[in-house]
Length: 603
Image (tube, rainbow, N blue to C red; front, side):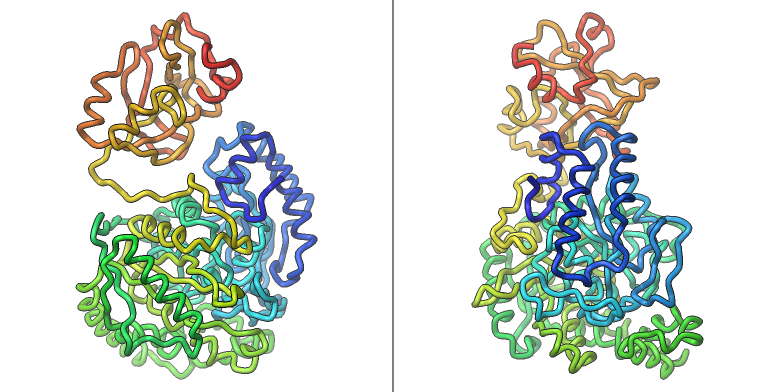
């Protein structure tokens, strides 16, 4: 029995307990058919194709959880190419059949994830509310009268309603964050250029970002890490230069009185104030900053020459198919005709001047914490004022990509009636994506808002994002030092902590060593061997503890470099080849934990 929300921890536990990807897609098929929101998907993956993809994965990688996203079902915003499914950008006349997956889709599928369908969006990703589609308006999972947020509307609702473990969106003005807030989800918006856009229908090509909707920050970060990486086919792709944040005394910038605007929504304002209190309780130093230059930069995205990028993306199609556009989307895109090359340069000059002003504000704070959206509206209210009310949603999001920021949106709780959720977004300078995650995760956990529509759900401990420790040294363990094994205390008592679980690549064999107390395995690399990998954990130790630990490792064990299934190479336990000559090979168990479980601790 799968939980309502398909977070990665729960799904992996289900697979460890014997369920299969085929079982999971059958659950998805049933849930999808029973959904009360007919506007989530534009093109669902057909049932038989879903089953076929699950079977193909099980043939390719039969060992449960042997790939980073083994059997994880995900949905894709329908402006991202998925081979075998049409790309429409919510405009049927624009539809085409892609010849290949977008780069991000190819990477996710290689990691074992399964596409369950293409989701609805504000047409051509132009909007933050989710009502600008000929396929209908997906609704908030908490009240069908309210908008889902956009433009990544269907993607957010798919995750929040339990149809997918995660979903991809895109974010130009806030489309990967606003729907997360309206549906009690995490929204991961990478630094522009960190995740490649090859195979993505552009909105504003120079600032578009592929985003992740997930149940927890830990899930979202893990998924982003699979997608990220330089791709020369994307002219805006960049090689990451990770940036750190202070380990202690984090300065969190919050809105001052002059720049606070919630458009009369006192519930969202109260939730923002409560989030500030939580940040302070978590040890942050709260500082007021002047949002005005950020707001002025935000205004350029829709009230400046950047709207001409939207026209550039679809100008040929608009010239022949203007009648096929949503009326509001057409009004916005045709408004770009008012801007010429001079206006484009003037807009760029203004942005750079504002960047200088925001730089002064960044001297006050390490990160910013803003309301993800200052308010929300019913579908009826939105349709009555589609441009004005949509603009309110982007007040605190539109600047982030123009100013080259990383951002993570997290739930902040529910209004006074326990009716609708709101969220806050943590914003950092370029390439603070990883550094933002521990504080964002702590804020989500402190809010106690659950995950998606399951507002009572407890966030899994396994998905917790721990603060980075730059001087800690990682080590791979495979046997008696694993969590809950007899020697694990040698890691924990020295201040070590578990970074992640995973597997080696397929070139390793595992043996049960003879005469060791407590029982221990020996890991040996065999370059000619093509297995499914061995279960491992990666722990981080303080430098002095690492030195003592390595010094005390008894022969025939030692340390060397171990290649993991994700391609990384880390220091870990290896065994001298001669020592396994008389031992029992236990590679078939996939790891020491499985072997002990099957044979008992005395084995």
